[in-house]
Length: 340
Image (cartoon, rainbow, N blue to C red; front, side, top):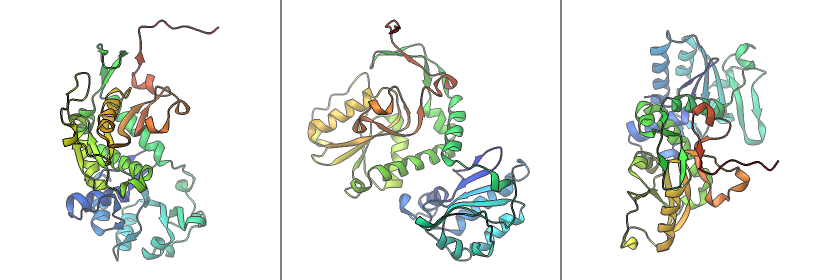
């Protein structure tokens, strides 16, 4: 299974670290989570096999291999990259360290257009060919192609929704079916959760050393929490039935530990009502609320109007720039007015 493959009009993208994480944790039983940093032969073979099967289905022959977070490699991997080139693919490595360029023997291939970042000892772009061609002029934005693919896949799973959102007293015109999104696009969903794990690691790097607990606030988010638990090597607490009808916990101290830190995990955060409920439950008993993470969030306020501690960390946002295209809107029964 390949999870990070994104096909654009100009190139095919792979994230080697994401593929390595899947291999390590779900195939090779290494259980190192996102902290795995060594590229293995099986990961390269998986990508090679994937390209071999689909080689006749796409006219795109430019390949982007993202080496972000890869620090080491198994010996003798160079021949596998040579085999990829022999299949007719033109390869650009991005975010690859000087050490790996040497270790993999790529330094035998010199291109004056290779883009160095000497301050951090890595190449932003390293071409596995020596001449200038159309690929050297291609703009590469990993975050942009990820968001575009997420949006295109999400569109299919947004349907009209006529009922009011009674827990937050607003009208929402559409329903986002995250269950179908995850089940129909399992590989891409895993990639999205992987990226969410990286965001958590970046945001709470110091706090992760204290083993905070991931809180599953609903059964809809249980799949996301289970993957994050494996990737971040953290324990899980499940609080079900948090929403319009709240479950009364008579002995919260049996499930929430005083002074432990908690990260609340959601599938989608619309207005944050359910998250606030869970936050209050945690703090009522004396637990420490770190924050909230989600695959999707709606940006109903500008970032400057949201306190950082109340913000949601997500890999995709529904904003005023894309909500019309996604046919997603939030409204109230108050009449509109103008200051003019």
